Each structure stands twice: as structure tokens, then as C-alpha cells.
Length: 342
Image (cartoon, rainbow, N blue to C red; front, side):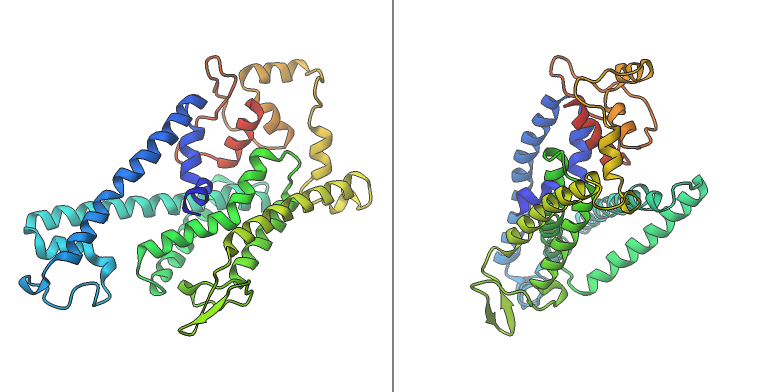
């Protein structure tokens, strides 16, 4: 779940889609896999030090942090009671800087996605000033919600595992369909999201004190809490994937066959299929000029996506095209242009 679920994280695709070639993106992934294993060694050593230390000989005293329920604070406690003051100050400063950097990135990513992919769809014509205020208000809301979650559990690891859980059950099916299923549509995406989210909530979550209403075979009651032994997270993910495929095919069939009126087509499924150029169709002079600059713009224009800047994003001899973007890049546009160049 942690390995496959993290594939749907936005920061991962920001790095891969901004690479100059497929070979570079592939190399980055392999290097990151090894670096993650190396970076996991220091936390293990710190935990071993906290477990083997005789705390009676320190200013912390007895019992140990684990017995006091402060295992999540092992690093600050070790720096405070087992190292000189200068090392403690530098270490806590490094921890605070890393935490603030991660928090800043998460806030900006969440607010940028909401503003670009949701708010601009609701209001098609918005001013730059309005977007700035929407981003500011979104940062306040997301920051308040994120801070309030700390009252439920103080362990950072618990929320990290929970985030991987949600990306695995909710976002991974969306990513698979975006990259590999050309017939998937927004109707299927919305239906798949609702199915995955509702099923995951009904399966229960101890962090939020949610009881297990949807109980699979092997579910047992232990210490007043239902424990699911069935791979229910994979079941939620597969259910979402099937829902996306079924709803995408069904809505495309209903609108293109004229069974449902076109005015009900909120996501323009029929319009997309009609405006997309067929294989072997001849491009106009203007289209040829656009394709010469970046063929991804042809697909983006066909889908009605506003392309803000022209970039030449080719690779040498591999035929793949990646969209080069920064931290605030549009993830959706990057995927569209990657599919077009592929």
C-alpha cells in the first residue's frame, strides 16, 4: 500500500513530468528508491538509542518515553537530554525547518489544485485578484483543518500512513485511468471517487474513531474495536477502478447514442469525442504550426484547456515529450501533454 499508494502523490509527478526525458525520469525513480532505504536507517538508530538508554541516569528520569506514551517525541527528547545544548538547538532548528518546508509545500499544492481544477471550472471568468483571494482563503481553511487533525492523534507516522491509505484507495484508480484508459471520463472519475471514499469510511478508521460498518470476512472485535483482516483497502481500490470504467463507458454510450439529451452533458463527453481529431486526419495550417511547437498543445486545445505558455519539451531520439514545470505546475496539463507526446 505504501509503495503503490505513493505513486499518486503530486510531488512525485512534479519531479517526473519536469524531467527532460523518460530516461532521466526513470533514473530518478530508481535513485529515489535506494535513497529512501538509506534515509530510513537514522530513524531506526534513533529509536534503538531511545529503547536502550537507561533514562534514570538522565535528567528525563524514569519511566522511558515509550512507557509514558511519548514514543513519537523520541528525537526531541534524545536531543534535549543526551546531547549538548548547541547540538539540541541546531537539531531542533533543522527539524522545524523541514517541518515548515513540508507544510508549506502541502498547503500550496492543495490550494493550487483547488483553485486551478475546481474553482476555475465553477467560475469560468475570474480576475487575477479574485484568484489571489481564493488562494489565501484556501490556505487558511486547509491550514485550520490540518491543525485540527493533530487533536485526533499526535503521531506523524499515523497521518503519513493514513495519507498513503487514501491515495491508494481513492487516487490510484484515477491515476491508472488517466494514464492507461483513454475512454475514461469525468463522470467515471466522480463516481469512482464517491464509491472509494464512501467504502473507505464505512470500513472504519481508528485514527478518526470511525466504527467498521462495512465488515468483510475475518472481521473481529478486539478490545472494543473491529479489526478488519480482509484486504479491504485493495477491495475499495478495485471497486473504484471498476466504477470509473463502467460509468465512463455508460455515460459515453448514453450521450453519443442520443439516449440522454446533450444539455445534460455537464462534462462535455460528446463534445470531446467530436472535436478530437481522428487518426490520420489532416491538420490545418494553424494546427500544423502549433504541433511543430508542441504536439501536446493540440490535445489540450481539443479538450478546451487553456495553455499558458509554449515550450519545446522533446527528448533526443526517444519520441517522448514531458511538460517542464515547477512546483506550482498544473498536474492535469502535464499528464495531458505527456499522453499526447507518448
